Length: 309
Image (cartoon, rainbow, N blue to C red):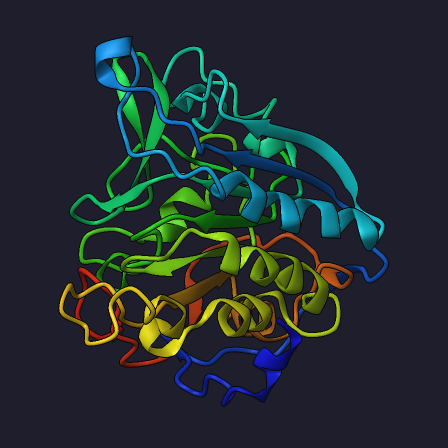
């Protein structure tokens, strides 16, 4: 929704780092990327051999809107995976779990989006899969989880259309690097650029489809992080007021999108969160000591307190 640019610019941007030399390197400002989309709308009950979860039939359409619009801007559609045999095998690193194939799926893309039910699993996000692989029905990413370590093959931008995929207490928890753990491959080396997700509960429905195409469109003229945060932010979730006008059921609260960048220097992380666009992609980070977040401080979502990293 282009009108989202009328929202107040998120000014509460914070880093856990010391200011260092302001320098960064541009890669290719006319960068044509390969994009992949992964979405589950038809979840399989455990009684039928699946991992369970309530169906959300419009979820794939939300992701498809982003995927299709990326092609409008000249990027290559490199894989659209909806339902089917969606397991952690497509997202996990073979250095962590035997038989994992992220080098053929998630990490083979330049930009990818995953849509599935999500939960806060202590210090990281956990996404529900459609079927089990290696006795695991959930994809655990970030924090102390070992499943996901992207960046060693190709992935720069990881987008999560999933609840609790960027909870404030999971961005940089004590004892690990939070989401940066998933954006880094500690064995082969390599660092992805940006993680986007949601603090607390996000919503699925036809009314949100245009948010995803608008996000793709706007991220070619403003920073990817800024486009994600402003296009997906909904104060008091006004679109659901029609079925809970008085807030009796506690379902009409803020939708709280969040973006996280990383870099080897303060400048690399800062420029990544502020200025990196789909058509202005920087060289890969060579470290993850510095990070920034972008979001609405105090954003009050379902199942979480106000956003406050």
